Structures are given as structure tokens and as C-alpha cells.
Amino acid sequence: MTVSVLVVDDSGFFRKRLTEILTGSGQIKVVGAATNGREGVELAQRLRPDVITMDYEMPVMDGISAVREIMQKHPVPVLMFSSLTYEGARVTLDALEAGAVDFLPKNFEEIARDTSQLQKILIDRILDVAGSRPGARPSPAPTSAPVARPAEPTRPRPQSPSPRTTPPARPAALAPVPEPEAPRRSARRGAAKHYSVVGIGTSTGGPVALQRVLTALPASFPAPIVLVQHMPASFTPAFAERLNKLCQIQVRQAEDGDILKPGLALLAPGGKQMMIENRGGQGRVRILPGDERLNYKPCVDVTFGSLARSFPGKTLGVILTGMGADGRDGCRMMKQSGSDVWSQDEKTSVIYGMPMAVAKAGLSDEVLPLGDIGPRLVEGVG
Image 1 (cartoon, rainbow, N blue to C red):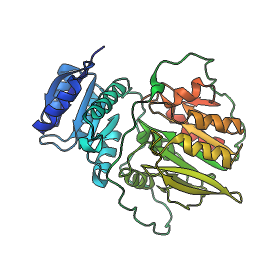
Image 2: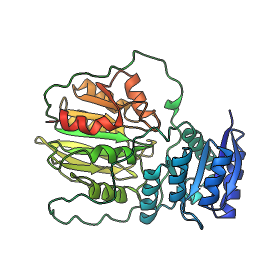
Image 3: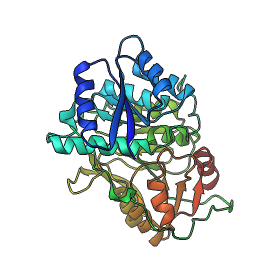
Image 4: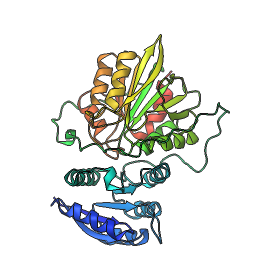
């Protein structure tokens, strides 16, 4: 089956280059090209493509406004192209909140130096996005005003991260898998349980999903939280700052040596790996260089595996929307150590890959809609 794509970008060179790469695969057909957001909205209505690629800075109508209008009129998976800068990260996060499914660097040299590798990454990403569900997610929590929070010590500004990142190749786990026993949706709603730490892992669709979950938590949330979101190094500082402004709990990018505390969520820095150690009953963060043998940096399996070893039987792992199967092995280690695992359901997942892998492996104690996960954390974590 051929995937139809609409390219929206004000650069004639970029439109031509992207069209050449995509059409060369034989799996993708570029059905139209627009030079601004307004034209993109109109062509999306008329051509009804399977996927839209969208620039964010254009005349007449910018990409974020175009995404919002497309999602209101006829939701289509949108792949944003953005710059790997701090400001580019902020704009991209706005686009994801508006409804875009995923993003890639606009500078192709930041994706891959080799032309054949570049073509594979772009085509795989388009095909993955084509299978997403842009209308699946509930409306995110309001973002018009940050929450009021008691004064806290000033945190240092994040250091400028490396501008280069290599998106992972399309995981083989997206291939069809055998159908084991269906996961059971837990009906148990007993007394709250004590956890030494809550780990949340996610990928595509994760920025909006994490915002939805974390804004439901009170400042007095009793457990530390560690977050793993597949995201470039230049994006995680802006994402952590965004969440911190919106949430009652504190959220910041993790640094080596950080101590886990109740009511504090630490986000794994992009391009690196985050592990949690147990030092005399207290959780401490270790930030390590990204291992080139691993597709994902940060990797949910790495962080969850360290949680299983450091706090056996005392950890809650939560897997949200995302492509691939990252998190499945880490959740298996958690279950083997006696800890609990929850996963997001298919209906509310933008891409039902990571949570599906966990549920199909029989590792999920509870399978929950996105809108229920935050309130369930409040109810179930003591």
C-alpha cells in the first residue's frame, strides 16, 4: 500500500529535496506541496493525504496554526520539521501539543550523513507516522497559565546540549507479534501502596501524554518520579521547563548525582542514559554517555532495569504511548523483582507500540486510558 504525503514548506529547495527522497522509495507518493500554512490547510482538505510534513516558520500562516486547523477540520498525522535548538524545541513542543504526532530535524545532516541512511530514516518515520492515531488522545490539560507553587531554591539553567542527535532506526518490534492471552484490566482499587519510585517511559505522543498525567498530580505526591521520553538532547531542557511551569509537582532535567525526592519528577537528558542507584535506601541518579549499541538515548529499558535492581518490589513502572518496544525488557525485570507495571490502552495511544509490547507480554497489572492514569496514581500511590 502506497502512503500519500503532502509536503508543506516555504523553501522550494526543501520541498524538492524531500519529495525526491520520499518518492524514490516506491512506498510513498507525494500528492501535493504547499508553500505556507494556509495553503497546506486547503490542500489537506482537498487531497486528504495519509501524512503531512510541516515546517513551523512560514508566511501567511505558521505551521503550528496550520496543525491546529487541520486537527479541527480533518485530523491527519503531521510530522514536523524543526531546528535542533532550544527555541526550536519550544516551538516543536507547541506543535506537538497542537496535534502533531512526531518531529525530525530540518537539517538533514543532523539526521544522517549517508544518503541511503537518511532515506531509510525519513521513509521509516513517514510509514510509522502514517499508522498513528492523531485523534486518539484526549485534550491536554490547559496550558494558558502556569500553576502557582511555593517558592523554591533557584535551579541552575541547563547547559547547552550537543546540537547533533541520531534518531533511532525503525524498531523491528513493530512487526506483527503472536497474540498471547489478552492483558487484564485490573478492577482492584484497594488501599494506596507505598512505592520507592515511580518510573514513566514513553516515546511518540509522549510530550502531551506526560503533560496530561503529571498535571493531575498534587504538589504533595508521596513518591519520587523518573521520566524517560525519547527526545533529542536539545529538547529535554525546554520540555522539563515546560512541565515544571504547568505542574504542581516540581519537574526538571536530571543531573548526575541528583537525589530522588517525593513530589519531584526528574527527566532523563536526551542523548544520554539515566540509571538509578540505591544508596542506603535513597535513590540517586547516574547520568551516563549514550551507548551507541542502543537505539534509544535515553532508553526506557536501561532506566527501568536499574530501578528493578535498586528497588526490587518497590517500584511502579508506567508505559505510555510510543512506537517500538522500548520498556518491555525493563518492565519484565520489574515484574521479576516483584514490582508493578501499568500501561496505556490502545484507544488513547497515539501509537500503540510500547504499551502494546508490555501488555502482549503479559506484564501489565493495569491497562488504563490516558485520562485515568494521573488520577489512578493519586489514588494508588501512598
